[in-house]
Length: 191
Image 1 (cartoon, one colour):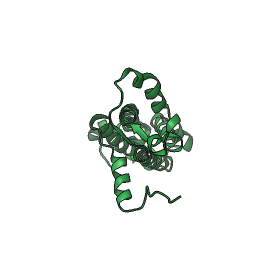
Image 2 (tube, rainbow, N blue to C red):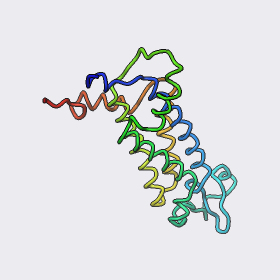
Image 3 (cartoon, rainbow, N blue to C red):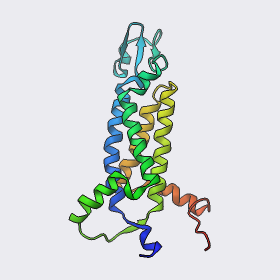
Image 4 (cartoon, rainbow, N blue to C red):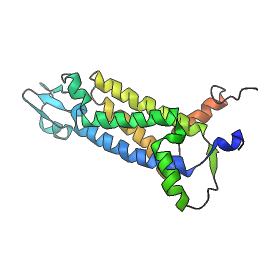
């Protein structure tokens, strides 16, 4: 098999992975919106952001900065987003063995018609890196106590994954193509 043929992938694989990732990111966003990252504290009790309208803003403080590092680490939204970030990292380091790609190739692709559309494997791999950067930023900011960082990062990554899953619009791939046109990535080396 030639190098050019090996570098081309069925376009349905990344869309399937984006769909699974979008579901996970939507769950992480929900957990972030209802968890420690957005909670406000009023002395001896804490409430969720939906109840903010019924309490005066004075005397209230964000619960996240006062939470211990262990509480931040054990926040369910943090744990789920950390798992998603690990999956993004896996997709960057070894895309052929990433779980959603393997699942698609082994269990779904055999039941579909043969692929008629293929794409270069580099832009989806770059998109995994973009997802990793976005989610890792949210995780780090959450750990240092920045309120809302985790659900915002999860929501941004969700929007990108959902656009890819539903419409086939890969934002990370578009960024890769822009960088390629600028000559910053994807240059072939002369052998």
